[in-house]
Image 1: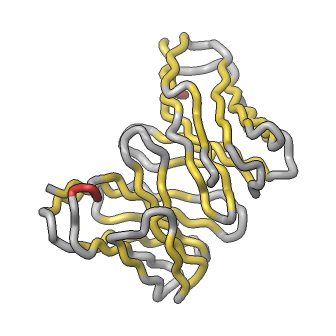
Image 2: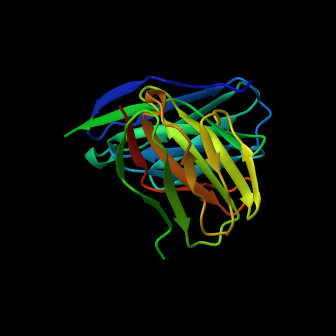
Length: 110
Length: 112
């Protein structure tokens, strides 16, 4: 059974720092891996989707990598800003169903 | 273009009551799904549909019922509410296959 883990559960860093969020999964047979952002009391917004054949995807200050063989993905956020404060969730598409991690709550201090 | 809409935003039920959570989309997406999100846990799939007239169970289907009579709507029915169903419910859609999903704003349900 696919399991997805995100470490750390919470992270607080000063504004301007570069940071890395981690996601690991137990079964490498995935179609893709997706990173989402969730703001308090709001829905989820898709940030990046990495197909199983890809190694990374970039969008602005965000870069996500995928290493299927080791069951790991990282989300790199460059030059963090207070507006980046949110919960970040990763999900793997396994047999056309998304399996989710519990998320990393990120706080960027001005 | 409203995207994915969910109603109501908040709901309080008593144990044993039934209700329907509404989900509608105007993007003509074939795939729709319902998730629940509990504190400290990832989202869990309740039911999903790959097109009108086709539904299937996800990870946690017990106590919930769905139907898909049109492409636009995918209601979730709670048959007899229980306190364990207190959660935030999200509806999501995608074009199909392995595309990204688009989420509604959620319904926060409390069962007393």
